[in-house]
Length: 451
Image 1: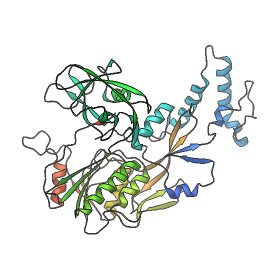
Image 2: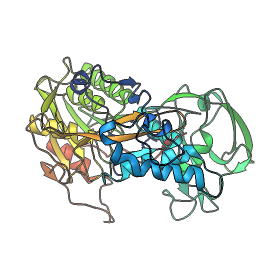
Image 3: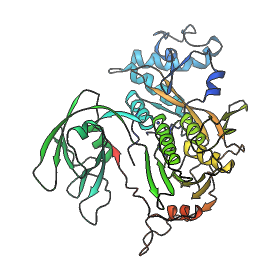
Image 4: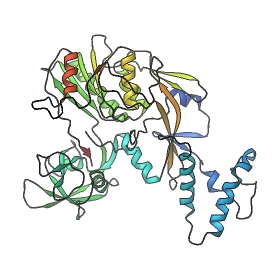
């Protein structure tokens, strides 16, 4: 699968999942508040004023601009601590770091694993992880063990190499002549030995228009340098295969970005034009993304009615309904959704919607169980931002699956077939095809990420 690091990561449940942006109904209710949507995140205009201005270097003062008068007593200890640190600490004081630490501590006190402060760099990477776009060279890469039959490996070195799975069509890497199977040994002259896959990818990526030089080994030959100018890359988050003599279309969705939703719709429409009426939607190990993308994906199969419900802190529930004109809403279309313990958040929104509306059969394992929605908030360029849990989401039948997950209609035991001689490489897919009364070889699901 491609690396999700693009402007939906990391988030992402289990590393989360910033699985969300506020849905339309929520935004409508908040129109007029001092918030402005910036791309996929919510930018707070002047949101850091409480900590960035209005403090006094004297004793406790109640006239701190930005502190509500009714809460002056509550905030007095904070300003006392700020005053003591900035006035009396022996050594240099980085006030920006103090601000970041204060925000981090405040959100950490919520004890919510899905609400978190992010530094500017962390915020940028998290946005890339779920947005479907990033700045880089456009090559899917993975690590490969040089002994023991191959397979992925953790740390690049003498027994573990960084290999190109494939350049993305039309990317700078493709134009520079990078090929599938090329081994990257160095980035800008510095060896990649000792780096993890994520660390190596971070070195390959960089601002659009800048140059990076990859040292390549091809077919056991001598290393050679390939200079590449980075550009904006739209990552491939949808993979499709025709199975069972073309009667079944397999679609793997790696994340929930707006790009991924558009790619999936295009794939479904192309299959429907060929007369395909059986689909396998693979959401295994998909950590989620935007709720807007989840709505779009589910709407390709569900013609009308709620996709999910959003429940605010006051208990108010608002439905997010299907978008009209889905590519595969015909009742003759049959859908099997593959899920496992790594299917979370937006994946569960889609799977739960298809299950409740009887539009799809869930095959696999119990899902992760993340039933909350986060809003992304920008502060300043120097301060970063945070994600904050603002609501619960419920399935169309108003089930809240937080902490419990979705139970598949057809269960596949964990590790089914693993290590058994002659076992299928993908018993989940085999069972899905049985449900659809079809058969085919399993597709390759090797791990790969984009750089």
